[in-house]
Image (cartoon, rainbow, N blue to C red; front, top):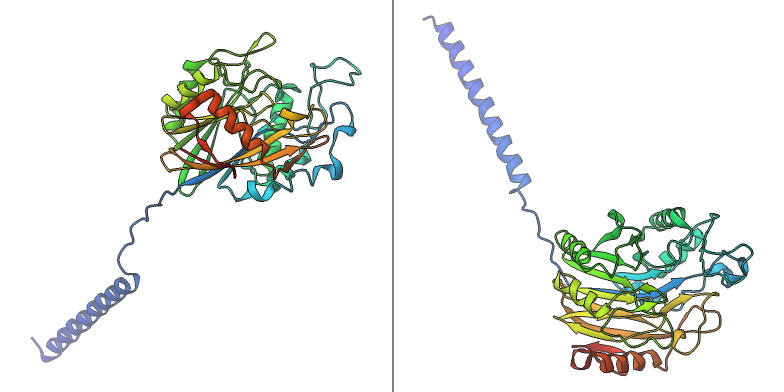
Length: 369
C-alpha cells in the first residue's frame, strides 16, 4: 500500500473517533443538565371544611317586581359572605328556578298570592360573590316553571361556575368538586317523581354507591319533612305535607350512610331541626330558611337560621363544626345574630331527638363528638 493511502486511512480514522467522542460528550452534557427523570408527586389529602345553609330564594318576579330586594339583591348576602367564602366548599338549597319569562301552570291567572318562584338569572352573580360552590336543585319549587325553568337554572349556575345537583335523575343528580386534594360528590334528593326521591331507599343506595366509586367523600342533600312552625322535631316515621310523602328521614339518612355517604344535609321544613352523629358521620336534619325574600312568612321559628360549618377528615369522618347563628328580619335576607338563639334551638332539639347521639354544641356554636 502506498504511503499516501496509509496516511489517508489514518486521517479518516482520527476524524471518526473525534466525531464519536464529541457526540458522547454532548450526550453526557445533556443528561447532566436534564438530571434524573422526575417522578409524579402524590397529592396530599387534607381535611376539608364545608359551609352549608338551607333554603335560598333571593326574590321573585312571578307576580311583580315588588318581590325583589333593595338594590336589586346586591346586598342581600353581604353580611354572611365572609363566613361562606372562607370554607373549602359552600353549599345551599336553591328554592326556586332562575329564569326570564316562561310560564307556570302552578298559579291561576291574575293570582296575587301564588308560591311559584321565578328568580332573575342575573342574581347568579350574588350567589357566586357570596362564595357558593354547589347548589341543590332537588326541591318542590325548582320545577315551578317546568323543564324550561330547570334548564335555565342550570345554565345560570354554569355561567358563574357554580355546580348543581338534583335537577333530575340523569347525570344532573350528582355534582363533583375537589378541595385539598379530596374529591367530593354532592347528591341531591327531593320528594317528587322528577328528582332522586327520599322515599325510594333502594335507588338512594345505588346513587351513593355509584358516587362512592368516583369520590373520596359523598355528601347527600335532601329536601324533605313536613313544613311549619310545629315541625321542628324529627319523627321516626314517614312525614307528610298534605297528601305528599316527604320521607322517613332518620331511615333515609342512616340508609345512605350505610351505603357510603359521609355527610347528610337536610332542608325543607322551613324551620331548623336537630343534628345527630351516626357511624362517625354527621346528619343535619334541617338547616331552615336562609335567604328567602319577600314571599315567605318570617317570624319566630321560621326567621331563625344558621350557617353550618362542618370539618371532615379526608375519609369523610366528622371532625368538628361551628354554628353561626342568624335571623331573617322584615321581608328577609340573613343577618348574623349575636344572641345565638339558633344555636340554643338546634342544641335543645338535638338532645331531645337524639340523646347521646347528638353532637355536643357549646354556647359559642362550636360542636363536636
